[in-house]
Length: 171
Image 1 (tube, helix red, strand yellow):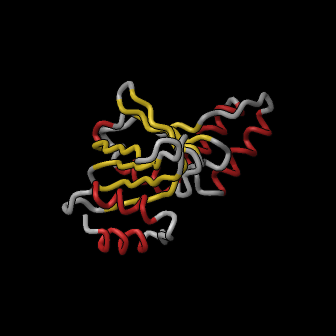
Image 2 (cartoon, one colour):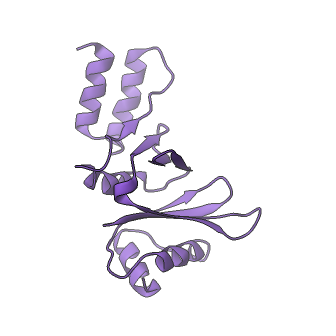
């Protein structure tokens, strides 16, 4: 995809590239074909450096620069191949995408809700339900407060919260 077209679209989605993130987004734009529509975009951190994530109407893309060895780790995954995805951390900043036996993990996902919402759109026939990892706590009231914060932050839906509440309260 032409970078100017890509940049215009991600700006519409609220992402404003700067001199540090532009190389990431240029790499992502090169990976995306012209017949795809960008649905969601986010910056992220990989184990080795800064990166970015894009969900189009057809594929999931990631680019993470490798500070230690140079170059970039790139992933292009058809949405139909994603077997599950998980958001974890109280602020939902950690995203795990699973393709069969392969697991891709991204930290510091700045727009995890946008990415998850885009993945959920394809959830009808292709994905397992999104999972929110359970925090390690034995107090149901405290755990419920944490899930309420996730709801208030827009990380989980009211339906997700109600299901978790029913489980925690034994209803």
